[in-house]
Image 1 (spheres, helix red, strand yellow):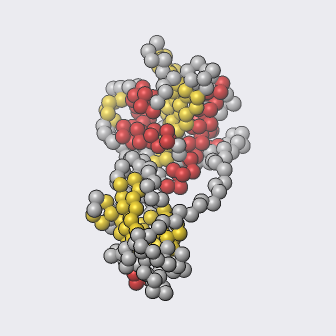
Image 2 (image 1 turned 135 degrees about the vertical axis):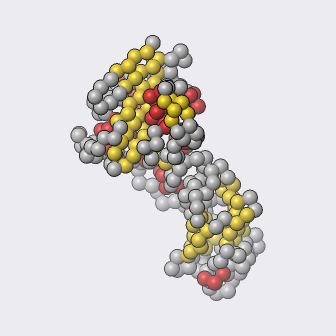
Image 3 (image 1 turned 90 degrees about the vertical axis):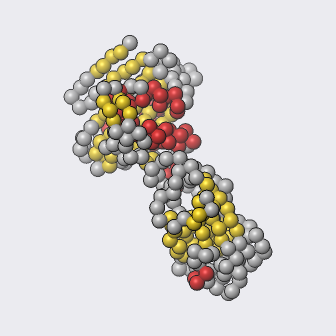
Length: 319
């Protein structure tokens, strides 16, 4: 069964597939609307975070100069491609020893170009890569015995590794830690993989598009709608409280120029729901739209509902 509903500013289509996947898409293209809420609702994006605990790092040999905290933490995964490496010591460092011979970021045994800096009190050094890190790579940080404290204490040396995430654009580490689940990361990677090559969206050939980056505001708007669809057991772009896509994104304090949405129900995994969307011209067009730069998604489940799993993707470009 295929139904198409058209309107002056928003086009909607609903496709019921044999797999019981229900997908709906909407696109508000090129709209320039004041980003204010009609009902005054403000969506809170997470609770205030507790202070993060320190992560000491034992040196290879005993020294009074010690690492009391380091980021990314040794062995961490899904790290941002645009992040920095920071190391905090218990003593101030001798500035002349903070150099590329003693502080290195490595990829496949080759040095990565970084800018080295340390804070005014000399306890924290920062490595800022010259270009974005590569996705799905293992990087190594090396601190040698040449590092010294201002009192002349030699450091014991250490090395550790961390893994970067897949293609997630310029999504920051703060965003990853604040609002992204493993499913959110998987969906962003799936969307950017789809955008990485030209594809046929119905009768239109869409060229490859730049990677999207994740925004917590769009995550909040999408999750709000997914929760609503799961709780009330419906699939629509209009929420049970009457709010529209544009209203939900404005409510989340995102000042937008254009927005688009894909919603679906019944597909259990990221791969399955993306397959359904990419096989539908309207949904595919949203995914491949080069005018969008930001992305957020929501997933909600309800065993008592008709479809069990409900999805919402929000695409946007800022004003």
